[in-house]
Every structure is written in C-alpha cells, then in structure tokens.
Image (cartoon, rainbow, N blue to C red):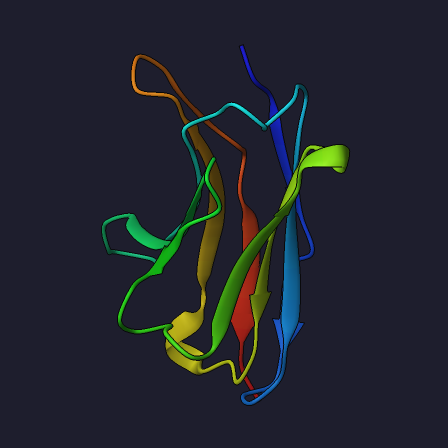
Length: 115
C-alpha cells in the first residue's frame, strides 16, 4: 500500500506559479509511474502530467510548456511545477501512483487561479 499526501496548492493570480508536492509513504523508485491529475467542478478527472520509473515524462496538451513534473527518489516525492497559470487551471489536483496491478490516489490539493 502507498499513501500519498499532496501539498502546495492555493490561490494564485493569472500568470503566477505554484509548485505542488506529492510525498509517498514508501519508495517511488520502482513504481511504474507517478502522475498528476486534476478535476474541475462539473468535469471529469483528467491527466495533467506523468513521470515513469525510467524518468520519461508526458503532459496534457493544455499544460505543455507551462508545467514540469519531476521526482526526488531520495525523498519519495514527486513535484509539479506550474508556471504561467491560467484561470482554466483551477481544479483539485491529485497525485497518483500506478504500478499496473494497483493504483493509489492522494486526497487532492486545491489550486485556484483568479485575480
């Protein structure tokens, strides 16, 4: 079992930046993929960014060039650096650990982009 705890959300003005963190309760070194998802009110949860155990990354088209996913294996932590934030980035952001046969979610952290 893996417990995931997100942090770093908050209120930011358009054009601003935030860095989200996802701390795992065990080593993330061998987990197939760690991902960030988001869910806005009235919408389905969507993939934002993912990083594999090999270090490969992929992003939703809507965040490419603005968001960066990274990991610190020594700290069992995954990050999402979000720059040039837009009002449409407003959502609850969730961390996910996926190892094929199992998948775990964090409780989410709210990101609100508003002036």
